[in-house]
Length: 175
Image (cartoon, rainbow, N blue to C red; front, side):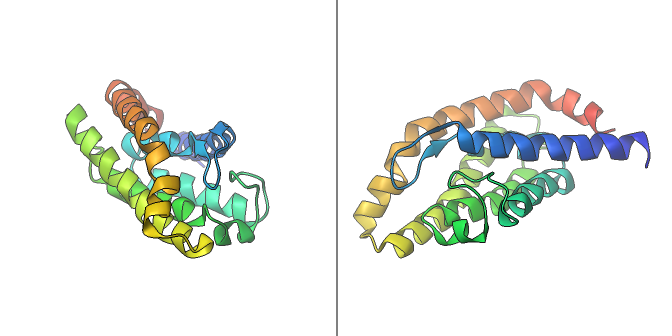
């Protein structure tokens, strides 16, 4: 394997680990904790090409599915049947959405990409939360959306700023 291939494997492993670490940096409010996972998903999707960022996300999911405790609720396939399963699955389309915005040279394009990616996480997350806990729509929004709004605005701002300042370094890191 050449040097570039090794660099890509390191980046994939690093961001998979950062997403996992973000699951443990949390405010444990029921039924869905506030975590830093989405911050690392947003940064990864903005900094790296789709093939690398989706590989990091899929590695993270694979590790969780085989039982490694990388999710907020631990590990194993059963985590996907719990209230946070939809949010976790929403991270995959979020990465895809971010890939359309990563080549832009505008912080505002990054912000728009992060907003759309965050919505891609919320849509399956809220639908699955409502289904698994048999909540009303009002209770679903009050427990699965409202507590996260301020934090997500901060995450979007941080991810956009980080991507804007580290874009060139990230490209060099994988070339």
